[in-house]
Length: 346
Image 1 (tube, rainbow, N blue to C red):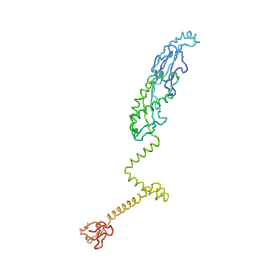
Image 2: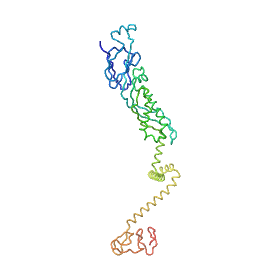
Image 3: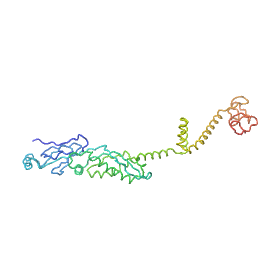
C-alpha cells in the first residue's frame, strides 16, 4: 500500500499557519510521511488534541488508523474512520516590514505646548516561537491564518503601549526625535510579554515619526525661526530695508502694501534708519578721500600724503596751517577751521 506524504508550501509568503487538510480532518494512515521544511514546525492533532510538534525533517506518523482495519472500523460510521487527525504547519520565519500607526491622533499633555494631538508611525517584525500556543490561542481551527488576520490587533496593542510610555516618560515633544531609538528599545521590552501570551515574539520595533498636527508644526517652526533670528532689532532693520527695496522696485502699489503690512510703527522707524545709513555713507566717503588726498612739497615739488608733516622725498617740513592735517585741503592764511571737513586747524 502507498504511504501518504504530508507537506505544505506557502505560496503567498504571508501565512502564519496552514491546516492539512484545509476542510475538516483526514484519516491519516499508519506510516504516513510528514515532511517539514527548515522554516516550519508541524503540530500534529488527533482526536482534537495536540499530540506532538515536529521540526524540520522527515517524520513517520503513527495513528490509530491501521490500514488493514480501517475498512472494518469505519463500517459503523458510513465507511468514515472515527479516528481523525490534522496537521498544522506553522511558519517560523520572521515577518518583516509590518506597519503600525495611529488611526486617529492621540492626546498628549506637553509641558511647553499644553495639550496636543500626536500621530505616530513605524514598522515592526514578528515570528511564531511557540507553535502549539499560537494554534491554541490565535489560529484555532481556522484553516489558513495570515498576517492580515492579526495586524489590526497588534497595531492597536502597539499604539496603546506607546501612549502609556509617552505619558510616563516624555515631558515635551521637543525631546522626541533624539530619543526614538531609546524609546523603541524600551517599548519593545514592554510589548514582549504581550506578544508572548500568543506564542509570538516581536523581533524588531522601529519608530519612524511622532508628529503633531500641521498647525502645531507651524508654531514650532515659528518658534525655531525666532531663535535663529537672534538680535530682534537688527532683524527688524533688515526686514524694513527689504521692504523699502521692494517698494522702490514696484512703485506706489508696493509702497501702499508695505504701509498696510508694517503699520505706523515701521513708518516711524524708517526715517531714522535712512538718516543712519546716510551718515555711515558720508563717513565712508570721507575716509576714502582722506586716504587718497595729497599735497605738494614746497621744497622738492613732489607729491606727499595730505596728512604728512614732513616730505617723504626730501624731508622738508611742511608749513603749519597751510594744509588741513585731517583731510589735506589747502588752507588760507589765518584759517582757524578747514573749509572741507570742518576740523580745527592746529
